[in-house]
Length: 341
Image 1: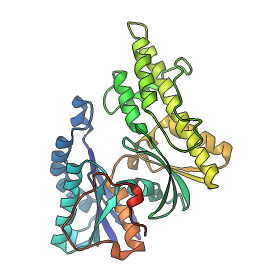
Image 2 (image 1 turned 60 degrees about the vertical axis):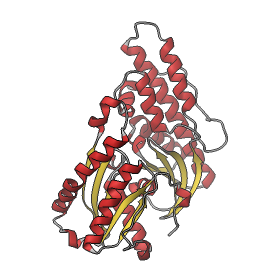
Image 3 (image 1 turned 30 degrees about the vertical axis):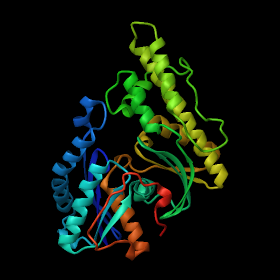
Image 4 (image 1 turned 60 degrees about the horizontal axis):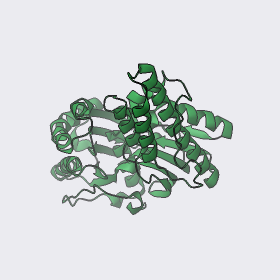
């Protein structure tokens, strides 16, 4: 079975072809970072318009990469939510329009399920496992027992980790997106110069809260001696990154201990962070557990994870897809509302 995946939930337009026998056949991605940089964040209307411009050329690119024609596609999967409503509508319209024209089944995919299953694209991890999902919009710990079988262990009570990265970077005068910029700056900083809080580190649950850490960065940046030196900014960046990494790492290890599982899967854009990976790998070695990451190119939003998640659902439940091409999107779609396989 060959599944075409379409991702357009925010500021990346991604298309991919996944073959259930051969694996990933082709994928193409366009990021809107350059367009949104001058605004310091994603502008929803601009994002939607850019998805419209990019989708068809990317579709042609993946078909050419795979050496396939559209009639050879067996099913089409698209991100139905959560995400920006206008952006989601572009992908949904393209998927349903193509499926209607080709008389193919179509399936709406939960964006977070795509991220949760993305490390399996590398065929490394096996069920069950604990998943740490860290992105701009979500920071969650879940127990994953199979496709569609997810148990929420902990969630963020306010800002997600990726959001805290971006907002703290902005406070330090760094460009958007802030996550990679503040991590790179932190590598030049000295540890311990700025003692920032570790929110909910000892809360005895698996929830997160990063709004207080962001506020601490704001106060620390205002109290730095003037003129602010590049070393001071690097030291503050190091203090921020060390704090957020410690919280994510400790909570993940506690979740593994609580569930009795020995496998941790890290997904989402923050999963590409070098400091986080180094800390998790160090703890995993001490605790004798395994940590799995998606390939770096699949940490951020992409069509491959949607094609893969759609294919996994269809393999287990061929009736999950539909030929009713009237569609809707779900900008707010809690994962626990996702139908089990």
